[in-house]
Length: 231
Length: 242
Image 1 (tube, helix red, strand yellow):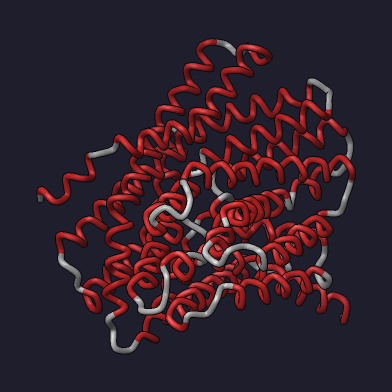
Image 2 (cartoon, helix red, strand yellow):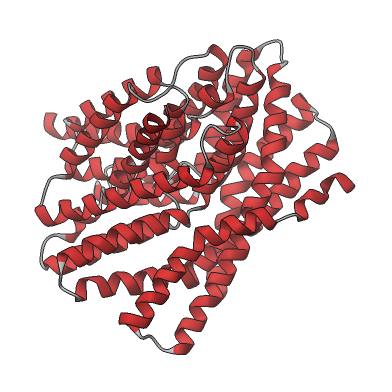
């Protein structure tokens, strides 16, 4: 426990401090915005660091064991339909708990002044992840090489990007990047292991990899489709 | 100091956090009641974690919303008034570089690749390639805003290169590469650097914050995919020719 805390603190410092130092240097030598405003940044840094530390600890102590308990239960039912359905639900809900997703939709909401409702945006991002997590599990069952699915997914993205309104394209690609965070990744990997356990015997090493990559295709497609609906 | 009091208004963020974490916890409770039936003490311990996660996420999102967003966008606006805008491109490179070198998730990835390649791709080499890659892509992201380049012209060639590289890589490398997409999008890149980009795009004439300001995360996510696959392709090539 004690060691865990220390590791967590180091992790957060490593992730936050380097950019903070660069920003402080920029402020000193290049930008010099009012110090009251800049103190906002420093307060923000402290809140983000503390918040991230507490959140990651909470994920480790609470959310991950919950997910693992569910994940371990799914294969025991023995039914593939049951497993695939709950893989979808879990993928959906885990995405909701991803901090960066909320940062992105918050920015979209503030900057675009009502381009799209933030909750609808979150909904489509999470649906995208849920559907692609399910597809990723199906892939393991049907033994489809991951390269086909990745290539297929990205080709569909490329095609759809020509039909998506210009305002939505950058946001949709960003949505693919924010869904691979500290909550989603361990959950999806655990799910993959669960599925391989049901199948029994199939090489779990190769099957586990590539799931995250597949899962981040979903939200890109989700937001693109949302954009097409909105236009 | 009164100006800083808005840090205390957390009602809105708290509601978001409930929507974020509530469903997962509810789903668990459903499983607990129907299937799992874990001991009471164990579940209470899990809920201590949930309380931590809720507190942490609230602090994090509030810090981003009230601290980073206004300062970042302001910073972008000030940068827009520089006489030589090109100086922002090396600044972007530097931001990408330092963020990646220290990022814990990147270090785990480098470790995995070292193992997957049975030691032939060293930790340090990959860390250097990845950090340079992310630096270059953040710089590209800034250049995209300054010169008004559409994101199509970067992301489409990028993914086409990725698709081509797939032919030259082993399966395991392809999987690792695409999984790696998220590792470099650390908390400061997604929050603060993105806010600066939004401010810059908003302030520049002829650019829109929505169409030009977003897209940075996507570029940062593409950098490791391309870097890892290039390394994989080179390794494959060396292996075959020897």
